[in-house]
Figure 1 (cartoon, rainbow, N blue to C red):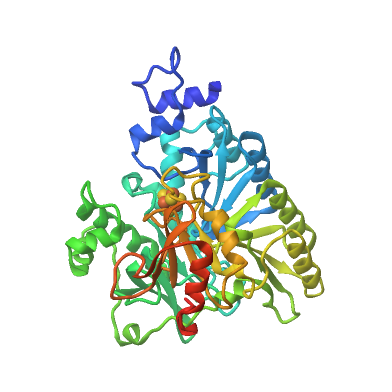
Figure 2: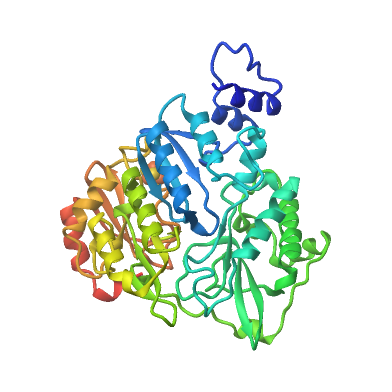
Length: 476
Ligand code: SF4
């Protein structure tokens, strides 16, 4: 263990004899004692079948080309050179080598991929808490789509507010907020503990507020833009008051308490200026076109815009990430946007450069069109990386891609935890054994993955069963 990391751990773990330790104490083990969680993070590198797993949160999914290169370098130097784009618009490095965890975290923090104000000498627990308070989802078009409210500054203010409040370190690493500016491309299916969606009222904007759902759901009130940070602070305190030791998510608290109980509690924690009027209940979030995540799209009057693509099943190697960084520098604004569809956008590409950028993304092996079967498949890590998996879901998904009926989408899951899908997919193949799956169809009257359609199928039989379903059931 490097001296700096040893000193940092000693500061936050005075009870552990690090200086003369006979057995190495990994930061992950130390953190498990401090803040128990199985959720990977920047300094919480958790063990997986293929090595350590490190998750790097990217507020708003925004990643500069320089930091993308640093990520690729860290993945090559300290791990197996394999990265994944997640359905929360984050990145994770797989296959971290034993003994390299602290060096990897330090390299990432040194590259500016940690929370603001954290450096490699910061106490590990402080870095961990600050890292885990960055779960604020934005549209991949935040600040790019001129038809929408630019949420980037408000998101930064929310993150800053949360990390300044010591009590919020008690929030679960999974606790997440969505801040929706009304962009034409936004993930509207993943539930968040708290969601805020911009509502235009003439020239003014306010934010509609909802709990344990997404902006297509029923709001509980609205907040003036200037009141958002103070009111969310009060709401988070109220959540922690009611959550106790055993409830970690908003849905758990709402299962035990009414929304009004929560809102009244929030009034005790300072300013909580909730607005309720007829305009709130008449409001509907305009639909988002998920197809806009792929291909070239003009946003500006001069024809410039962005180009979107996704690596097969969200997995990308370090060299491809370096190539994306170079492409963003040469043809865009030297940034990338990771999307919650496990893809990436290159923003601010000039109109005349868009065809060449699209061609280069195809040459790199990325999926660039919704018609590609790989654009309609998601699969969890599977048995090569996860001990819980009953099948090699990634390899099986690649086999299924060649057989998938037109328009059909599918989620493959190695077990019931469904890590790859943050919302219920139209169809799910749940592994029973290597190469064998049960087929489920989404059904709002059923729990879990939905209704069991056919048990114990091979991948070929699953493709045939899917082809026999009515076309109307294929799309999400
Ligand atoms: S869904 Fe299950 S098998 Fe797949 S990665 Fe998650 S825990 Fe592992």
